[in-house]
Amino acid sequence: MKKIIVALSMVCFLSGCSGFLPQSGPMTNQVYSSAVEVKSGNIEPLITVVELNFKNVSLLESNLKFSVSEFKTDKYFPCFGIGDVVEVIIQEQYPPVLLPVAEKSTAYVLPAQIITEDGTIVIPYVGKVVAKGKTVNQLSEEIKNAFKGKANNPTVIVRQLNADSSFVTVFGTVKESRKIQLGYNTTTILDVLAQAGGVVSPVEKTVVQIDRTGKKISLPLDEIIKNPELNLNVAPKDIITVVYKNQSVTVLGATGKNEEIEFEAKGINLNQLLARAGGLNPNLANAKGVFVFRFEGKDTVEKLKLTKAVETQKGIPVVYNVDLSKPESFFTTKNFMVKDGDIVYVATAPSVQYQHFLNLITNTISPIFMIDRLTTNK
Image (cartoon, rainbow, N blue to C red):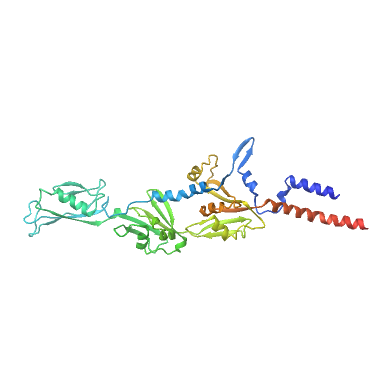
């Protein structure tokens, strides 16, 4: 009788009854096996599993660096643009030769002009003069040169009455959302935020987003403050949005605690996240089965050369796997940044599942052994 029970239990376990045993989630081999599904002889990938290594992490890191390089621009110097209002004052030495004189004054003030769509203004006796892209001094010198030989040693003064072309727009969690004119001393992200009265959200959870001609980049404010290279020069017509961003990652499986963990806007790497989750549970965790579930974009998938990845409405489901039983993996995870909305899962070790099975068998068979012994003693 005892042999029959043991044999039946083993058959049950080996045939898949182990799915009824307690576990915190899929085993490592189950995650990998879910990467493909066989339907009517066709192999259809459901998720893509990527083993984390130095090469893959470097590719993921390059996404941010590439975006920053795209947004680097020269320091802004005030210059004229389309829609700006310009005033030109022309003065001849006495006696004037070309320009009219009123009450012995040799200065002539031209009516204020708006720089037209072709980037020009009109100067009497000269015609159209290109103003777009020129500084005050450059435009003054060009008009002065145009009057040489026509006026008696003229002096030209140019004033910018309105500079609509050199504004950036700032809104979000700042003291005052408004348009801010760029100038000699207002050229960078921090300059603009200071002009807006500063931010009103916690610095460590604040993200600055720049929208420029359809392209966007988001940078943590505390990183901009610490790293001068991230304090980018802004450009006219930039839209700067300051956002209070509460980011979090869900941690599940064989860790010290299962919960949603919030982190700062500057980000957090996988090592730091596991530490906040209490580390891997030494009695349960499979160090080879640390997974990060994430929806990725097309650009990232192309860089990782995942040709068989499946696209969904929310993105492309990718599962990153790291083997923490290898010492070098800790350097890899130090450079792997988790993202808002990621799910980090640590699989249970196979030996734990086997121990669950032994406990189940023991608890099932022990009463039978006890009854058998009592019956035999009688």
